[in-house]
Length: 466
Image 1 (cartoon, rainbow, N blue to C red):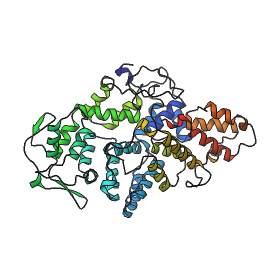
Image 2 (spheres, rainbow, N blue to C red):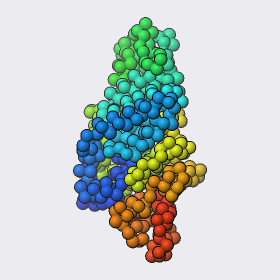
Image 3 (cartoon, one colour):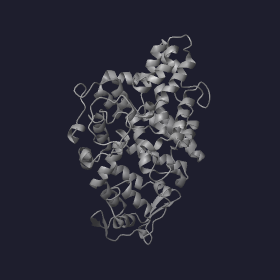
């Protein structure tokens, strides 16, 4: 496809049917996964209504958000991140606005503020609230809010920046990760950005500005000259074309594919787990999105265009992202329509490398293929097996047999296919089918058998892919 064709709206029919695989694909990428009723509603309502509901859920969400804000604020009083981590996971599982939480998780990875440096649960809760409130709006506004967040400075161990000794850590992140990206700035830009951020100190967990410590001299930042301050630096960086491409690339990787570019693809979803080529999308391929983002500075608009595009529903995007541990666990809980004990879940996710509120480095969490190796794959299998077990740390709350009964799915062969529809877009892997063929028709197909079948489906290679 040409870039213009790739990012044009997908039209069910000419571009392929609106069916179970495409609806499930959309709900995974724009959230974590779908429960059965939500999946059926999406199929019945069609693409346009489903995307509208994802972007702008009906009903009043203020009560839900205020309730969980209160839970997290109360949990932060014990000073540890274990409780607030558990409440965030519960919010992800129960939220009526999964896209909002999915994008909050994206910005948590992007800005990578860690409590290892902050050491204050209240500040971390406030920081995540900032990301949530700005996650679907203006990037310039969100970047400005983060630059004014004391947690950022503490996380980067840059709690003071004097006129005589500008701190470069925050300036480096502003340019390299939050802004134009590597290759688009030099040492002079870094020094100019650091000087623009002088006079900023974190005292008693609040960001304060001392005018006498601010360097008010002329600075040249990304080709623009003036007596720039922090607000100016944010504006200059946010409005630079290279920043637009940097953010669009990250959104592409988050919503579309892990390191897969503008390859020639059909509009039929892939029916196998092809190996993922290491090919990043070219600047030319992303140009329509980059231009729109540079002109309008609206993250939500770019997300909507991506989710409505022909490229998003082509095989170039289908099962071309590896689920992070959080996506894996939250998606399973949402599909099974039950909440689970999230204190233990947070701990197990941390052991798999995604410890919420504690990104491992200033570059955020691992991405894509970095999530999968021999050790982590065994850990992922163990996680879903324990979540679906009849007893143990998750107390048997996720019960696929009970869920099947609620949807009046009774015969063994129907239960097996229904679970495949729910968890794997309708594909019952051949090895699983062969192992279970005799039991499908026997009286031995019990609730325990259904649990075991669900566990095997979550251990299929396809289930590791979003």
